[in-house]
View (cartoon, protein in one colour):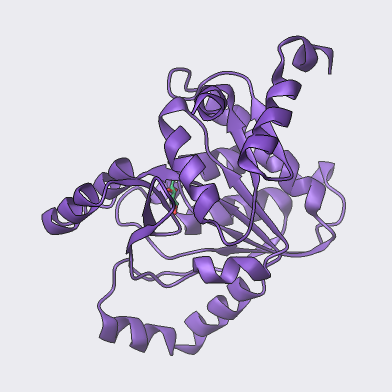
Length: 258
Ligand code: BG6
């Protein structure tokens, strides 16, 4: 629209696509760090992007986080959507400890309810020991969800700052020290990585893994706020499948500077 042209957002999107070398960037006005309502705009844009990719037969994997929860919140009700008969939402991972309202399971359920679609749940804790991990992944109910995740054709996910996510997950002092020593900058799908996109630590979690992404048709990364700029940039370096990026002006300005 005219407003987007006048405010230079369209041009910023183009520049950022070039800079990050990805096909599609969508930027919403504002900075979600300083203006909390901007997260709803990220949610609206993320929802619009997802809807535009629906074929009527989709398996959509979603992570948790406040940004993903905003997509669920901003999704229109089903009456406005065509082709939702065969849509299935699957949580990309199990739990994160506290904060049930923005866990992947909750977000999935909310999206599915809005769209009158089906969903699955994955009730397993994060950060499992090896034995527990092996036992749980051989459970048929869990194996089924993992198979569905591997055949998903849309992945919607958030990106966090390493430190913020480590705190949210209440990681141990030794893990925190390791992240700091290795200059972890960002986190996505349970992987912590540095500025160059090197993986530093991985939470042993049941769910979608980075290695699964190349098989997914559309990966949509939704993250905004100036404070997440470095985490976003490094994620795109690391990502084995180039995503569509939905972000805000706050992050975009920093990304274009750096
Ligand atoms: C989590 C994802 O649920 O959301 C993480 O699993 C991501 O990979 C995080 O870092 C981002 O959270 P938020 O609240 O900043 O959107």
